Length: 513
Image (cartoon, rainbow, N blue to C red; front, side, top):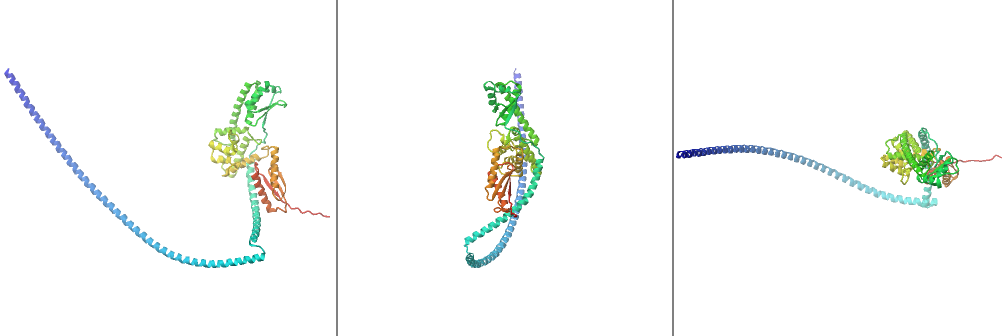
């Protein structure tokens, strides 16, 4: 038992000894590894220090070289600036010397001029005294004061100048008139002869034919309820009189009158005339007329070759189909103006696109609902609102001179509008207004001195004046025609142009006995 314990203790002792030995060996190995790592780290640190010292030295050398180079550049630039300053100083010195010389010369000239001024003042005083003496002598000889002589001389000079100016104006106008009329006649004739249109034949009333007079009672209805309903829905007056087999529709608005005509025609064909049916037919007629308006606008755009119009403008163009101006259909007038304007633009080399668009749309302001003001300016505003070019809009707005003309296209649009409105049969005019216009023309001409007789001819397109030859000479006749034309432009409104012709003749009469 004791031997077993002793053996275990010996084994334990041996194990402890081996453990100490192993620990000592491991500890020594770790110390050697740490020493090796410190040596390696020290070695790396020394290498980094050497590399850093080398790079620092290189940087110091580069910095010294750069500083040396900059110093040399600065010194070179300073030398150049000093040289430039020296050169400028030399130039300034030369200029100062030249200025001193010029100053001396100017002082000498100034002294000479002062001497001449003194001499001129003396001569001026002498001449003034002599002139006063001559004036006194002239007044004594002519028995006229100075103011009287000046007034008489000015009148003679004015009369002579007026006569020469009138003669020159007459000569220039005759030459320009001959050449201008020849060219203008050729251009306008060429533009018009390409166009053929009908005379005005529309009125402000529509006549609806009836199959028989019996249907008039059905149109009126019991106690007039049918005719009242029809007039209320359409806004037109239905005139039923003794005219056989016909009913007359009267309204200021041609669109409403057309709607009423279509509705009444359909009611007569249908045969069922009562308030409910009237309301249905009026609604259908309104849709039909609106479709016709759109179709008319599209056809007009195609006929005139104007493309890219806004749909609202196309509809306004179509509405002109049912609008009259002095009896002339507004859509036909606009198409005619467009064709004439395009022909004129082609003859004179103007912008065709601007002229076409302005001519077609120049009167859309007349049919635009809810607008106020001159229709030319309304047309211009509508064109600008719907994307038309400012040039075309200005040309349309200037065709009645509400705004100034800016380019040749503006004048061509106005000319085309005047040609279309002034051609024979284009428009009807009330007899009273026609007579008043002729009377006013003759009254304006009779108000000028020297006019003996006045005649308005060519339906008011020309006015002829017979003047007294002892009062109005040939030169004064030219001035008289110009003054009368200017007076007519200021006081009257008229389409186209009015020709003023002054006739002067001298008759010598004797009798053989």
